[in-house]
Image (cartoon, rainbow, N blue to C red):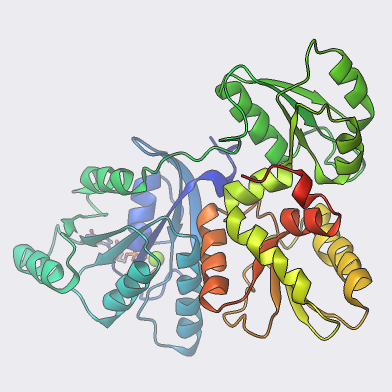
Length: 393
Ligand SMILES: Nc1nc2c(ncn2[C@@H]2O[C@H](COP(=O)(O)OP(=O)(O)OP(=O)(O)O)[C@@H](O)[C@H]2O)c(=O)[nH]1
Ligand SMILES: [Mg+2]
């Protein structure tokens, strides 16, 4: 179960004031002591997450958050951190034990703006005396029919899980949708050079191969230096070739005319983000001058291969094209600026460690502020002259 990447799990975040019972609920849902529970307000100080399987929903990531009403200096910082959790939340559960106040209204408003499906639940229902009255007040103020639960005794938890499963069930996205069909032979060209991790394939390759098998396609794998032999071993050309962007030119030179060509980065730009917007965004390159400012946003703080692209390869290519004076800011992890307007272009990484929701939240911010956004795969394809030679959608 743990082997499934967190980025592929549906993210369920629990919000509420201090002592609402958020951590107790997380422990109840996961059946483990994931978070510390105590009657002291402000026990949870940082978002805490735990992977689990939910019946009827599948692989999930449950996120516990600090109380929304912590008004201390540090508390405000924690609330800001909690707000960031919203960027990656697929389903929000808002808990209250006393009815609806400004803390609940604020978080519900944020969820609504971000179109996050939300459940409101009245907790401590084992001890509240005016349950019906509180439920009516919650419904009146929020337009949500609230569930009554007790994270402590387990009452109402089954209904809550069902409600989460109903809201969280989304159509499963496919990486290769529209690129191939059952029975197609798909040649995957995957360099395993020294930047590849030792003894294993990287996640996008693994996921793609697994999906092709599930879809009834016939995946055939080779490294770029064996591509000619792989093609020769087939009676007719493969319907689709998926290559690592690094090997694009070699692969393009050998590609049979009838085979469609795409790259892992293009497929994942589509799967993790908004490929149409990324292709549109890359046109901003036509407006870049040496005085322009570009933001490169990395998801991970620790992946050397990505660091290489974001910190070395891309800045080098951009400066070569637009001049050494070009301003390039690089941010990583959660440090994605609220205000993107100083930038002429935002370039986001492939986000293999992020869920789709987070990428779409960041894309939405750029779009709302009128700032062009693209991603590593698309811009590398554009800068190396590949983009108009691959299938992107
Ligand atoms: N009676 C009753 N007590 C509960 C229930 N849920 C939680 N509690 C108790 O309420 C207190 C606070 O619970 P927590 O789960 O730590 O609350 P929290 O929302 O995580 O609080 P912070 O981390 O401070 O934001 C603990 O003493 C729990 O045992 C419930 O359903 N009924
Ligand atoms: Mg807590």
